[in-house]
Length: 354
Image (cartoon, rainbow, N blue to C red; front, top):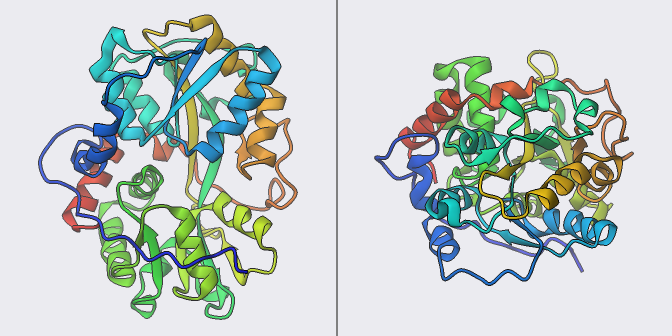
């Protein structure tokens, strides 16, 4: 039986008009999750509480390993990153969150600017290149990921798709799959492209992929990969590790991966990250958690379980991934500049994307 069951793309409303600040215009898309996040507070029977914008399958392996190593009772609230950021603001000093873990570090920097984090310099920080450090030690990267193009081998000649701009060409009309535009990685990728290519090119890119995707807009990356594997679409725009997870589950899947823009800027790179909340009730345990994530043991979980790129260069990436030096990556700083994130959201809204 195929591991890629049919999952139809879900129609989503366009980005809401109005609002200000980073991601404010995407608030409506996260409203349902936000309402759930603001439901009556759970009673946490834990010595550490993590608010995680990463999916449970990415969060839980790290938490389980941390529990086993330290004996610290740890619980996670997993929800949309934007909703969790709003919740942290609403809770203020009443929050039960000790750690804010995100799927996109741009959100962490926004939390820093809002005064929601406290500084901590881990003993392992020297193992992490400076480009992965947040200002004033307010946050630190946990892993890196690339924005890539996945394709169906029976439908696409990869030599014809060398850059991100190529998937916006008219020849792929009706053959492209993308995630909803409120996805943090989607926004971060667009922000990086603004820094690399300028707004005019990005505006044309968004218009092109909107046309080519049509109603093939999916709630997350996994169904994009599945649709490509089934041949329902020829190309998909995803984070790299979803491809490697899918291939590990079904090695004979007819899919391939393209790290775009190798002749120019390199593949757009974004990072996950974490920080200790300003009003953490268990700050000592939170510091231990940050230390664990940056340790060799913690980094190996991202590398071996999640197929992500470790931010600690001393930890080897999974053998399935490209070897160091074989793929060119764009600077991660391009996807972290909040003014570019604001402009990315504005351009996405202007195109009326799902």
